[in-house]
Structures are given as structure tokens and as C-alpha cells.
Amino acid sequence: MNIIVLQGGPSSEAEVSRRSGNNIAQTLKENHHTVTQVEFSREALKEILADPPDIVFMAMHGTPGEDGTVQGFLEAAGIPFTHSGSAAAALAIDKLRTKQIMLQTGVPTLPFILVRKGDIIPAKAEAAIHRCGLPFIVKPLREGSSVGITIVKEREHCAGIIEMSVNAYSAVLIEPFIGNGREVTVGIAGRRGEETTLPILELRTKEAFYDYHAKYTPGQTEFICPAPLLPRLKADVEAIAVQTHTALGCTAPTRIDMIIQEHDIRVLEVNTIPGMTLTSDYPYAAQVAGKSFTAVCDDIITWGLQRSHSTRGHCAAYL
View 1 (spheres, rainbow, N blue to C red):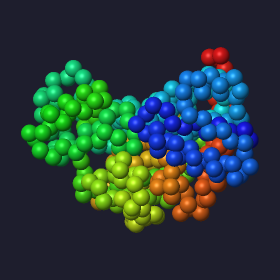
View 2 (tube, rainbow, N blue to C red; view 1 turned 90 degrees about the vertical axis):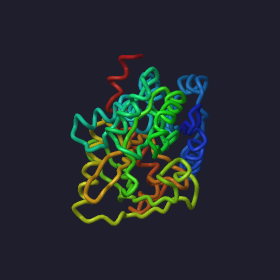
View 3 (cartoon, rainbow, N blue to C red; view 1 turned 45 degrees about the horizontal axis):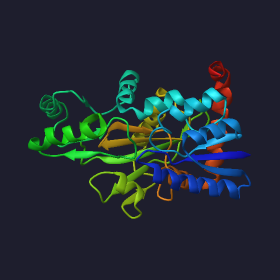
View 4 (cartoon, rainbow, N blue to C red; view 1 turned 90 degrees about the horizontal axis):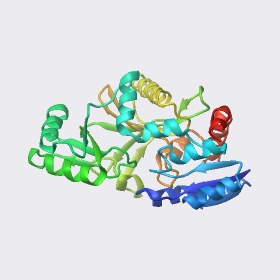
């Protein structure tokens, strides 16, 4: 096939995106595809439109590659691409909208407070303490890979840290910090309507939580896969992962991040373009399941083609 691997871009995750793109491109070339790595830009999109490939392999992390913007462009042009469509990507990148969908569909998640620019910060800080307790986590509304997350432990620092985060990111979500919880992540594989879970991966990090540094620095996080969970808890985690993926309308691959306290499971986030670097969760779990990196890439292409073909008639209306 003639494949473009789209990577990079203006987001804070651009360098990780390039590392994912390099791994994907190398593997696809070894599997005898014609592969072009393309650094995201408006000009690059125009060139893709002028000479469309058989499929665009999405290797972008963060905006505008993971928020539905690029996906919407490709849908309108009728160009197949991997991962989720524009609607699901736009929902999943927005932590508030994701929370709202989870609450509407019965997916268990943590309580939260939304803070935007213009809000009265001291009042919001008190509301966050009342709703979430201390310590709590402040996270940007539309960033991935744990970018910009801060743990707030002391009441006197609450308003100041919230204000700094809001000034940096315009809007933030505040949730309880579950310091004694078990962090797990579940990869979703399979065609639409036939989704399955990869082995559950438990993350034991040397950091305070599974942050950007822990995710992409070798040796900072121990992967335990399959996670040592009792059968009933394992089944519940898998069912909730598929439920979350389906509720947002995603197409595999996705990665569902959760926190577990004893038998209490809460979904933290949904990643619609999981990392494909040497330290990334999704390919690691797939390897435990007996899937090579090459097989994972081929599966992702197959799922993307299936989704693109099933929606092409709807997208043609925009041309």
C-alpha cells in the first residue's frame, strides 16, 4: 500500500509523535509498503489532498492531530485514515465532554470541578476542596500524555496553582488524587462492533503518578502485564474499558486509563492515538498478547480502512 505516516505538529507532544512515527514507518517499510513520513503543516495537508495515499496512518499526539481537526479534513476529502473519526476524537480530547458522556452512559469516573478563565479562583478552590478533597489534581482540559498536570496538597497553595494552570491552559479540570490507587491501562483492539481488550497493564512508576516523564523515560515505570487482578475485577475492568470506548464512538486502537482502589474502578482518560514508541503501553500489551509490532500496525490499518469505507458516503456530502 501507499501509506503516509502523519506526525509532529505544533503540540507539546510533537517529539513523542515523531518517535511514534519513526517506529511505525520503519515497520511498514519492512513489511513492503511504500511509506512517506510527513511532518504536519497546512502545506502538508494540501499536498496530501493533491496526491492522496491509500491511507494516512495517524501518528500525531495532541492537537490538532488528536482533537478531530485533521480527521475532519481527511473525512471531507474522502481520504482513509487510521484510528478514530473526527467526532470521537473531538470528544475524547476534551476531558469535560468525556466526563459528560461517561456520566450519561454509566461509566464510573472521578468527581470533578471545571475552572475557566474569568472564574472567581478562590471560590473555585474552595469548591474543589469540598468536592475533591486534598490532595487533588489539576489537569488541562485539552492536553494528553499527562502534560501540565499538577498535584495540589496544601490548602494555602490551591488558589495560586489553579490560577497559574488556568492562565497557561485557559481551562482546567480538578479531580481527587488517588495516591494509594493502582493505575492500569487497557488497550482496545478489533473491528467496530467486535472490540476486544488487550491484556490489562498495571503501571508502577517511580514518579508521584504516571506523568509525561514517567511515560517516556526508560526505567521510570514498571509494566506489569497481565496485571495481577482477581478474575471478577479483571472482567469488570475489561467491560468498563469497552463500554467507555463504545460510548465515545471510538475506533481501535484506543487506550483507556483507570485507577483502582480495592474493587472501585474509575476511568481517568481516553487516548484515541496511543503512543507507538519503544516505551509505549499499547504495543507492549499487544506484545504480551502475542502480537508483533508489525501485526499491530497492520491491524490498525485494517480497522482504519473499515471505518473509513463505512463513513465515506456521509463524508462525501462535505466535498
